Length: 636
Image 1 (cartoon, one colour):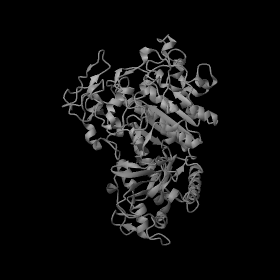
Image 2 (image 1 turned 90 degrees about the vertical axis):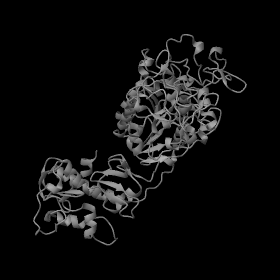
Image 3 (image 1 turned 60 degrees about the vertical axis):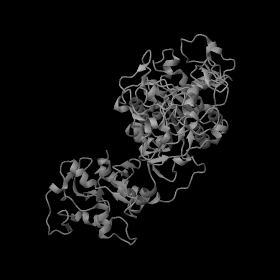
Image 4 (image 1 turned 45 degrees about the vertical axis):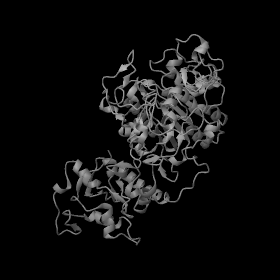
């Protein structure tokens, strides 16, 4: 009886909440003020086309046009793709898993190498990437790659763990990594929108260019003293094999986003997988020293209080989610095995790791006001068909994926707005009213188009309502009839849909309201799953009141008043017509009988096409009839 009473109280509260939530919500004074926690997950080395060139609604491979064509360094077209090279071999050699005569076109890697296995790595360096882009023609990726035709390969990650998240939330398909080249430089651009400087760097590390700007000798440092390729900090941690400090990058002093946040007393941390072990002198085999950009700065040098306060281990991030210590801004940098980097880890393992991090956030008390940005430091040497915009000498570089996940993110949305890595800085600066670091982040777009702050977000489940589903939910019964949303709107079986505790909405924009949203036949579906399809159930008495020949059942007397007094709203008239009730619940598809409810209590139950009625005679009216949680039971 106690459980039943709690159900009644829930429904009574639900009626009040459902009635009040429809009132238009006032926009926060600052456009991102409903976001109190930002989490950036920074993965490794994939272009957009390399993962999401087949993503529904995105600017993908089908739009590549002439960018598919590849020419050698002399401008001569390749007749076929050179056989992909496995750079893991010493020396590197053609990878026998791939054919030697693939056509010059993007090809699906999974045909030859499953996503849970490794391929070779591909060169991704400052000068080489600029030559690959070739002034926007995107036609020299093969020519300047050390992995030959592998640069044209892709996986279809649309249904992988991160791709599934993107289908629920917002995929940005016009996001570029901020600077040409590789991981080292782009980690700096994530936190300072800057390129580090090394005056008087050792000559052996300095690149040499000819009069036309073409590389004669590659190097980590430009001729005018900027560090653009992998180098290591004079601070800890750095590879123990480097004992000559003259070969280590000196302390950097330009302002960072961490400095800006600290000045405004906004909490933040950089969480790196394997950080504690690296500091202790026993780094994991795949710990990447050059993925720790704050460690290069004097403000976070060895022995500083700021280093201890802000540079932490990824394990501390997971702990913070559960012990109420999550900072306002978190940067999460997974350890090598989990970062998706080709050559030393598999794509699928890293994808699952990110999905696990997102799930941990969603299961925490922080989810209700959090925005998660998943993106990649750079393209990892893989081809993409979209020419990057030309902003300055540093970039942006090639297009990479970016996924925005939040209760307030637009649902099932592809955002075509131009972004780059500095857009993350701009987003943080806008939210906490911080001054820009320089002209690049000041001019960047800030993800405003990825959010819909008019959504109703329910803290009980962390999911929201918007658009036609929001209007339908309120107009036709709200919380007592449909319950809370259990996920975001997404495409299922070709239709945009959303699950609720007691139902599933399916969008049909080709129809006029109210038929633009239709309810799934969850009652019939669940009976079929239970091995008792409604067509096989015993039929009722045709002489009974409220009998329906269409299904061979009558609505039980205990349920008639409820069925006939609730329904969709078709005509705006007071009360519910037969057609309106039928549209909401459907026909009865079983006889009333005693069945266990979700708590195991035997109650009088009757199934309908789109509902299950349960009878509790000891409850006060009008709560003697309660609806089963068919959505929660049927949701995959």
